[in-house]
Image 1 (tube, rainbow, N blue to C red):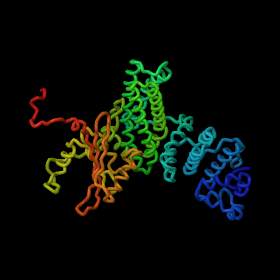
Image 2 (image 1 turned 180 degrees about the horizontal axis):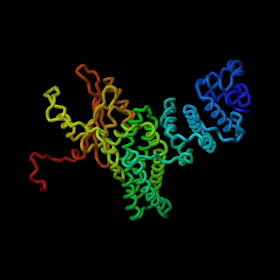
Image 3 (image 1 turned 180 degrees about the vertical axis):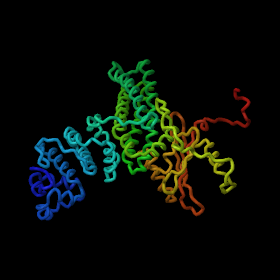
Image 4 (image 1 turned 90 degrees about the horizontal axis):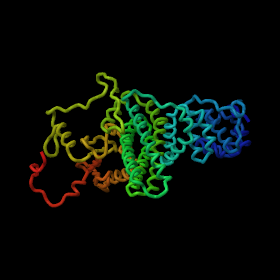
Length: 494
């Protein structure tokens, strides 16, 4: 049988009855094919061209999906449009059709399809890797849980690694944020190679203990690997908000969850090293290294090309401004970008000493005075309005939780790791319903005790107007004993 625009649906279903369930599950618009009366009437006369129009899908996407399912179930390679059996699948030029085929391949992954077959089907399609991110976005929009897309992300990178490897990494000028991120990846790869050698020796060693030399070497390497947090923070606070503005949130949520896994596994490996558990340190450490290597591939073959396609110069200037507040992992960026020119990067306007005063409940302050007060408090403050949008954070010199201008205007749900979103939503719902006015947590963060509190803000009528988040390092406060009633400046060394 030849699959083309003239192929009759009736003949196709008679030859391959399993295609009925496949098509009904492939597109909600094909659900009606399960109706036997429809199949005996319209189905007997309808061609694949008409079926594609009925389902509002591209004909070449439909033909490719059917051919792929026949190959998966029967091992038979059917002809397409008169092409001889076994001929390479035609290249898809229609973006929507190509995306549909990519999505269908991911669905087959979900159903446990044959990996080698999926590699073949992907080979001709993986020319525009930015579409992989768009495909994940559409799958989430269609109801596939983000956790499932995250799992599929790992699987499809494995399946597609040969095709992805053929794509050159994106190019950017030295100092450009994308160039800096890729240079950080090159530095990371060197640390990963050293750590891999030590961990592999530890894994294959004769005993369960860790020798002093390996302990010291691994301790230094693990400490160096924690620099990856700055790399991830730049993605989370700079790239992801810009993508969300373009309507692309799927890759951000998937990657952020993986970031947190890497952070957790690296922390566990360091703890195992400290306790001398060689087996756990090797197993967890090697796992973390592989996750980091996979993330480099996902960034440079999927995320970074997508950002180059979607971001304009203004977006990259905003990213550049924010990355300087977070800092850099392992390297210093080249100073050559952006090119010198007036007005390319907006400087934050400095408020003058005077200016109009803002009337407050008790007294009045200028905008400059308000800003000075808020940025001098030994607290991190963030304000989320009644629409769940981040509208302010205090840019204190040493914030506990890094923030950049990229979070302003972003939904607060997107500013937290996926595993924390349910808790954030619960707090906001309780605040809006008037059930609660405060929520608090305290955590150990790199050996410091951090107290985090959320306060519901209400106007004089009791209407909810937003949420204030206040974080404080209370390590020193917790350690206070006795009293100090006198100024002790004279005791300080000069």
